[in-house]
Length: 86
Image (cartoon, rainbow, N blue to C red; front, side):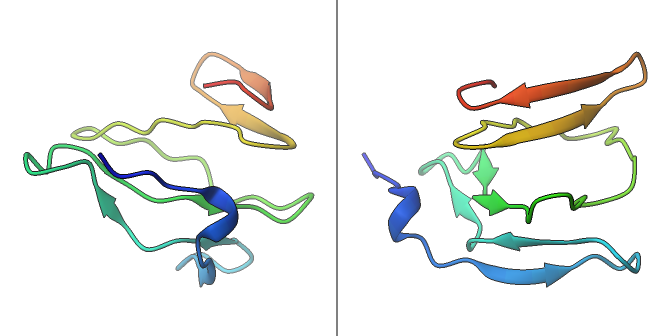
């Protein structure tokens, strides 16, 4: 098994191709030999958005809120996510 400690990950700023959107991200990791799940740890500055509203037709995203709060927009609603939410 591989343990990822969020406090030990090096994050770098990444700019969206859309002006005004950015986030801090770790390198991309793979879940194991199967390589089915790719993931990265990301951080947003307070009051910022990572990307304009969009959707994926052939992939999924999972958000795990480690600290703070975030707003998640879906076709149905906007939901506030808090620490510990997935």
